[in-house]
Length: 259
Image (cartoon, rainbow, N blue to C red):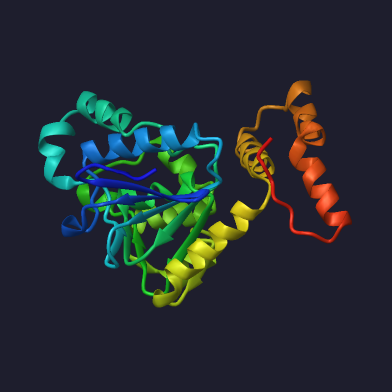
């Protein structure tokens, strides 16, 4: 599958898909059309049982993205009601994707683009990457949901440091506070991301989807239901379990089917 729009590219290589925010002339700033296209793309990818991993990136080497496109704020974010509609228009496709998602981060990762990171599962950045949420410099307030998402990755104190100082910080600092999973030399980012994607794709896809689902569920403090507590045992009636067990016994590489 290879699809594209003016501002979003979706490509497929076997079990690995890549979603590229394609506005390099704007440092991959996300306008409303791009946000909607990205949500729709992730909805479609999530429904594809043959897919195993998705890589999310920005076009070019200068930026993963510099956040929401401020040039359209006067028209689409000029009152509380408009702002609510604007936030809703970004959709939930990335947040609800069943498959593991890896963020490939080069260059700037600012504002709303950095706000995408908590919806991804692994985040691999180049050494020269720069991060910030400059909302305070624009008179913008992050809402409860956005702060809660940020706190999936960093501590309460670090979330406030990011929001209150509104300053840029480097990739090493992002690694120290847990915002990114891994930092590699700039010229090795793509190699590292796709090697990671290949390792994930080689494993049982049902296991990956369940692990992602369960980890996300544990962010909710509500007690697990009896049905939820039983769900992990469902893996023992899958074809993939039989394949994995037989391959281990025979010292072979398993070829999982996602069933």
